Image (cartoon, rainbow, N blue to C red; front, side):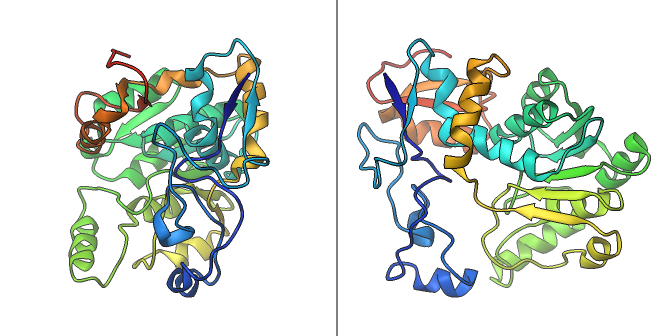
Length: 305
């Protein structure tokens, strides 16, 4: 019997450690939870990218995996699969809807497939890297390379008529773009007058149809400028966001894996032993070698995916 622990970047026990995160409590209003691998911003719990990890509340967090399911199909149940699914669920997708998703990284890839599982008729994915766009297309999405269009919002309106029914920002605080606002955001970050680059969020709000829903699984860290609140309010949009409720989704998504609804291993591009982790981080960060997702095996020799 295998066990998957909810011990990754955006998961963990719902506990607080106020002596450690007083500053963040003041910033956020209250401590949302304790998250593994999220630094002292939220709890100071170590992550799980090691041969062994100390897991608080281990009588609650682990999920038993039935015999016969390969590790590759379940390893993402404690991280990117639930995050992408949560992003799609928060988009309030109805059968026949059109959904636009900013980003084609690992979380967005699962959001694409989750949107279809939840009934979307069309999914339009937005990115700039060909290998990530190709993977999105393999999942059934139409794609936009934002470096090859003049205006993402206008392109989406041309493709949909009224705008997408739901928009998912799976990019978050480190967005890139070829617009003037990208350079404005970078300058403000350099001067420490803005913490994030909310380019995808701005576009999602502007593109979404009237009465639609904006879902934000992408991470934001602080204070952002030039959010089009006039468009958000006057179009009657709803917004849902938050750290993913891992314990809520791990078992239902395991059931989907067992039922053959999805094989999460599609996202794996690289495998490496843990002593190669720094190099793998660099390759992923620099968008090299068509790297979509790295699986670290602490006891394995290097092998091709």
